[in-house]
Image (cartoon, rainbow, N blue to C red; front, side, top):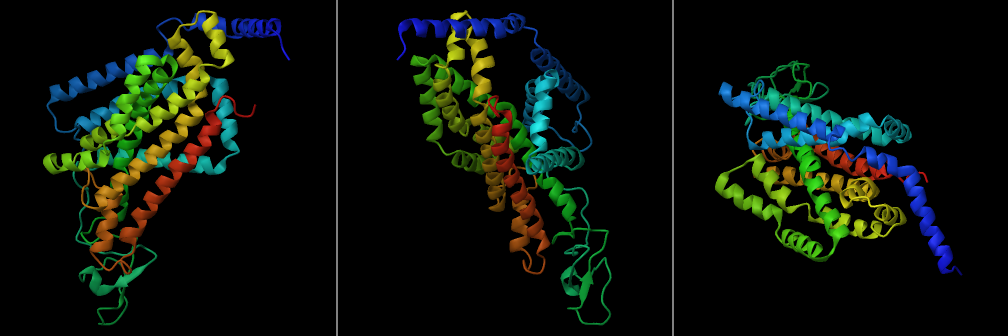
Amino acid sequence: MTNAADDDSTVSSDVAEFERIDWDRYEGSRSPLTAERIALAVGLLALAATYLYYRIQDSLYLAWYWNVGLADWLLLLSTVVLLAYGVVPLARNRRESRRLLGVLRARRLTVVFLAYLGGVLVIGMYGNAGFPAGGLVDLTLNRHQPPVWSSVPYQLTQHDCVGRVADGFDLTRPCYGTWQHPLGTDRWGYDMIDLLIAGARPVVYLTVVTLGVIVPLASAVGLAAGYYGGLLDDALMAVVDAQLSVPAIVIYLLAWMYFGGSMFLLLLAFGLLSWGGIARIVRSETLQRREEGYVLAARAVGTPSADILRRHVLPNVTNTVVPAAFHLLAVLVLTEAGLAFLGFRAQFQSWGLTIAEGLFHGPPTIVWWTSTLPAVALALTVAAFKVVGDDLRDVLDPRWGQ
C-alpha cells in the first residue's frame, strides 16, 4: 500500500520531469510565428494571388485543360493545409522523419501501397490539367481494340482492327492487339489508359479534401468535446448525433436531381455528414488522455489548454485518427465509384462509370478489359487505403516500440 506522502512525491517527480524535459520547448513554441503558420500564410497568399490572376485573365482554364470550379479551389486550399501541417513538420523534425523511414523500411507492403497511392494522386492531378472537365482527350474510331497481349473477333471492332488480323474471310477471325492501344479501347473508342487516368481524378479530390479539411475538422471537434466537457461537449455531440442521423448519400442524390452531377456537391454532402464517427473516436480517446500524468503535469505548470491539446493530447490520439481517416477514404472512394456505376457520377469520368460501360454495353466475357482494368484499379486503391491506414497507426504512434 502507498500513503499520501508517496503520492505527493510521485506527483512532484512528474511535475519536475515535465519541467526539465518540456518547459524550454514550450517557452520556445509560444511565438505565434511557427513554421507551420508561416507556411500556411504563404500558401494562402499564393492561393489568393492565383485566384486573382485567374479572374483578371478571365480565362476558362487555370492550366492546360484545367477549368477550375468550387471543387478545385477547395482542392487547392486542402493542399495548402496538408503542406503546412503535414510536410513542413516532417521537414523540420528530421530525427522523427528518419525514425518513420526506418520503421517503413521493415514494412514493404506498406511502402508499395504508399507508392501506389502516390502514383494515383499524381496521375489524377495530371488528369485535371490534361483532360477537359467533362470528357477525355483522344476519342478515336478504334472501338473495342483488344490489349496488346489479347485478341477479339474481327466483327467486334466494327471492321476497323488497328492490329494484325488473321488471314481469311470469316468475321469471327481474331483481331490482335497493338501497341497503339496497349490496354485496348472501349466501345466508344476511348483508350483505356486515358480512362484509367481520368478515373483517378475523383480519388484526388476525395483524398486531399478529406485529409486537409474533413479529418482536421473532426479532430478539432473531438478534442474540444473530450477535453473541455460540460456544455461544450453536449452541444458538439448533439451536432454529431444530428449529422449521423442524416445519410450523406441521400442528400447527394437529392442535390444531384436538382443540380446535376458536381464534385463540389459530392464533397459538400459527404464532407458535412461523414466526419461524425471520427469526432466520436477522438473524443473518446481525449477523455482518457486528459487524465494521464503528463497532461496533469502540464496543467500544474500552467501550460495553456491549446498547447496541451496540440502538443500532448493530439499526438497520442493519432493511432486512432489515422486508421479511421483512411477507412473513411476507402468508403468515400468506393461510394463515389458505386454512384457513378449507377449513373450518378459526380462531373468527372469515374472508374465506376467505366466498369458499368464495360459490363452493360458489350459482351463482358469478350471485351473483359473494359470492366476488369478499372475494377482492378478501384480494388487496389481501396485495399491500399486499408493497409496503409492500419500500418500508419503503428508507425505514427509516439509510443510505438516502447
